Length: 459
Image (spheres, rainbow, N blue to C red):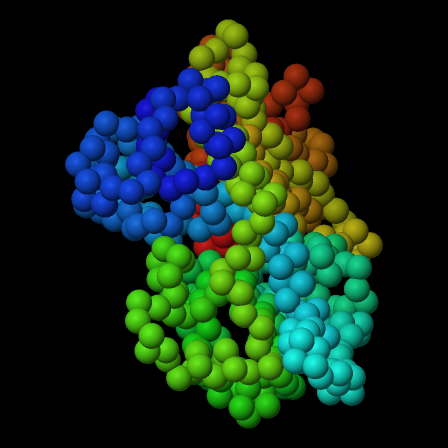
């Protein structure tokens, strides 16, 4: 496999791909047009944020199998066209999530304790103690919008403080021991601090604006370590001037270029930015929340591991039955059982074991061997339900499978009892069989793209 590295990264990335047998070429200086002219020679591209990979670029990349972005998002790539052409997209939010969580916490503590202005004053010969009296996190409510890799990392860092952490996300049932998922309305009613952890997309663009800010019941602090486009800077300044926003920690700015390397092409700074850089209520950093010595290596290593999982058979794929060309069961997809009182059972598990319930029960999210999002469903059924028939048991298991049609063909040859016909839904294909003891087993081939569409906006 021939791989072109368009941006410079930690050496461990090229070294790791070389060990996999990849041929690595570097081109950190050619123009986009020059790279387009030769991209048809490559099976893979490794990028950070040097330029956008658009439809025209992808059409010229006739052999391309993957685009690996050493970073958290894929907003610089025409995702729809890449999927249409069968190009796998790889991002590495796992590599710098810890760095982002620590940076967000560090900025907040610095702003609360006025460390920046106190340091500057001492260097000017000023010793002002009362003017630099700080705030404590203890007792505060921290609201998070977006609870993917970065939001979860920040929530984990907050565990050592006596705070309430709430999150709002478009995806359901993602709260955990570090954070309670709730509505945006509750966050607006209770939050002392609001932290943004959303990707760049239509939903997050200009999300923090005058209208949203006005709905907060009390003045709050704002943290943005996600994307600058999420915050309307003019409206942020209005909020600070009106006392609605008490302060802001901004690692990203609305004015950033796609490459994240340059802020402004000339010296004519926007008035709102002039306000920010002269305000003691604002702490700024140049998009470096995920930019640590450790994260540089972890991002590269994560990239290697994902490419290895997708394209190379090195202790990353499930063991395949030697008598079959296809993988069979790849995981447990669901645990189903009957109960005398459906609602009481749900409430018991919710209260005592923290299950987050929806109409079907509780969904547990995890990563498969290819680091893709996957689920296992926990669902109680009414005692009179006939869904488990012809089995006489009060339970049924659902198993995830890699290729349902091939598996069913094998099972027919082996004389296994197959119940009825398979069915297809947006989230996958289903079939049912009986085991030796007459237990009904549900076989599920998930639609991975369905789950990717649900989750890719979180990163």
